[in-house]
Amino acid sequence: MILHRRDNPPKYAEYGRYKPLLRADFCYRCGYCRTHESTFGSVRNMTIDHFRPRSRFPRLAAEYSNLHYCCSECNTYKGDRWPTDDELANEHRFIDACVDDVDDHYEYVDLVIKPRTSPGEFTAAVLRLDRPMLLTRRRAIAARRAEIAVMLDRIERIRIAAVEDPGTLLDVDAVRADVLDQLHALDNPSPLTS
Image (cartoon, one colour):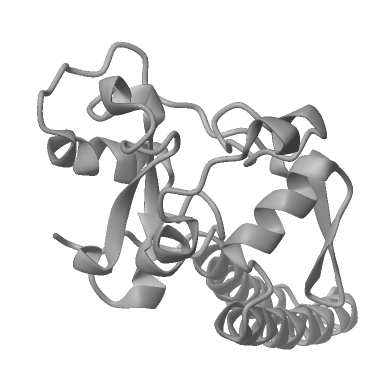
């Protein structure tokens, strides 16, 4: 999936003013580890990363297309890191979620990132995308998904058995809708209030 930035954002001299726009454009998730801001408990724990570091590309400091909504953990690991010329020659570069389809660059095998490309390997290594906290989060989400799958399976079996009783079928469909809402909420948590 490629994130789509808004067309024609306003022009601000101070990059920090873009944070509300970046939050929405990045679907309230870190542009690197894809962790939802609700995991961190506060919008203050989310930062703005300069994809191309200010230290090396000062003219891009307030350029919207160079800014990423980012958790403080990924921003700390990335810092002002930028690939060297030799690294770039070997296709070692950061994945840009607004340009690259992240799924083309790595996959998850048993919740651990397996790079498919040199950019995927570089990004995962520099940002430590398999750090313990991220693995713990992935495990928790996978466990909740498994619980929901079991509930949906039970509901489907009850639905099949209840075909003869329209009242029971309506009750089961209401429970099924609730479980599907839980699954949707797991994938799309509500944004934090500022």
